[in-house]
Image 1 (cartoon, rainbow, N blue to C red):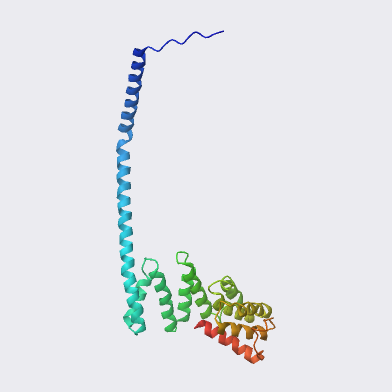
Image 2: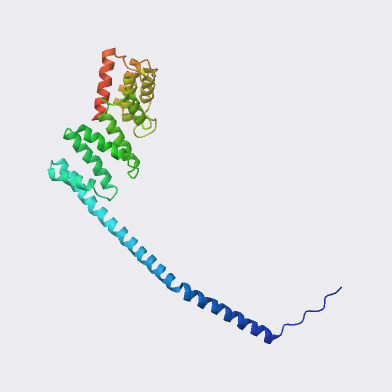
Length: 254
């Protein structure tokens, strides 16, 4: 059945409905603003103040970093000249909350403890750096190696291997220095096969210094490691191998 044709809308009715709709929307907006306008203004004001504070903090932080950079540079030059005041500057920067130079200063301050003969204090300082997640990973790795070097004689082999194994991996920046320490820890634990395997890997790593590769080659041969002919040197005697192990640990500690 066909539908009757739609009745054209009355222009007067349409205009009236639009006025009603506009009035309703205006009333809604007025009611919303009367209820929430003041809190919104307060929130907006707080946000603007916070943003301005953040910009000021960033600018102040950059200025502090620039000042510390100059102080750190002058302190390093003073250390080369034996200026005792430079030590005080480094120790003060180590307690700063500005990252970067504060972290480097912490490493230097730990080294001062070594020079003063406070080995236990230095190990504790290096361990704090190693376990601080806010410090850059390369600095933490260096602190871990220094702590292992200083405490090598008294540390349990399992503790040394746990600390050094992640760093003594081929292709990593610390493979050479951490590898020698880890191999010595294996020998300390009686794991000669693992030590020989690590020495072989070090002897064949062309990224390591030639002197370190030579030592690793001799140590590998001494403990039965299969070293390439072109890398192998005269096999040392047992006393020579022991001396090489001690020399390796001492040179790494330096």
